[in-house]
Image 1 (cartoon, rainbow, N blue to C red):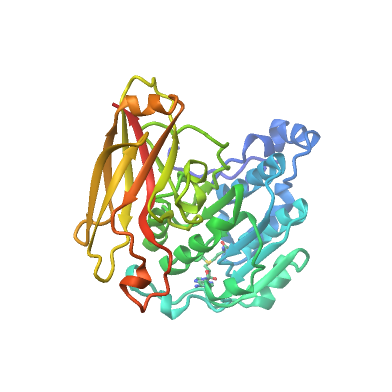
Image 2: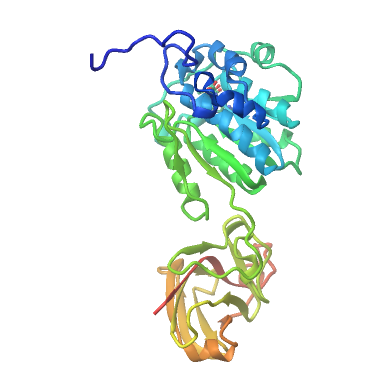
Length: 400
Ligand SMILES: C[S@@+](CC[C@H](N)C(=O)[O-])C[C@H]1O[C@@H](n2cnc3c(N)ncnc32)[C@H](O)[C@@H]1O
């Protein structure tokens, strides 16, 4: 009968009330699980699920969520992604038990972060102003007794303040963010993203839930200018997952028509002289000339369109800035920055002859700000002494 929920057949691995079929490799009745064991598969879903379902409210039998963790356990092992595990938002420990088991199997440490007293009142603001205090009916002691202490470090308190209690040099292979609200999720992405190993998983629960709107907003805002894309999952509350991009091989050519982010060192192999060290948002151009060395793969006889998402350092008496743009030493544009139109996408057509002058394989583009006064000279109250010119956020190239 359509809509009728039948109990699972005798001997079936599906848990009741069942919400997802196990992945085939983990299904005992299909014979694939034996093959999985022969191949060295690490998950033991029939044992590992106990804590996940035991912690009230037992994750409501959300087996799709559980099986996803089983699959990434093997993927982390297969690719040998280095780094620790971390969960922000643990409540009674249901997901932490699964992550702790995974961490022990892979010889990693799991950091478990929560107030263990529910939401912080300060976070129930803005987009989350309509939410109520929840999840206070737990304790560090009860979670510790469920999750176990081996290979687990419990960090009690308000995040992001508790970030100060994490090892400063730690790198992470898996970060599970399940704290529901905009402020801590955004703070967690800011903190953990730069600390992820290449290939490391960031999973944010509730993204597609339509209940926790702050989760969706925090994730969308954060990843808007990152190279990683988001993959929604089919678990009950609609988690979303992304994996930290692997480092690009030196000199990798741009993908035409796609934005390439300068955040977190993303464009480091395209930066010639005149740039700051990588910052979380991009890089500052420093001094009289900032040079971009852009690999060019299109036929060198065709012009190139080049778009930069940039803003200029404007402060004190410097209310405008003019920046000459040169390609292969030839002036091709002068961009004007004002307070009314500072950060913006600025585009220029780069003539093919300037690329030929560079040998056809690489294009040297220079940005030369005309007003070179330092911020401290413009406003003695600012500590900034570097002669800041143009801040670079993203680059997009395309053939014309
Ligand atoms: C939905 S529960 C986590 C459920 C758990 N991951 C599971 O599925 O078994 C959300 C947790 O996030 C924690 N939390 C929310 N905001 C926090 C913050 N700013 N700092 C620390 N913990 C926070 C709450 O205390 C609560 O325990």
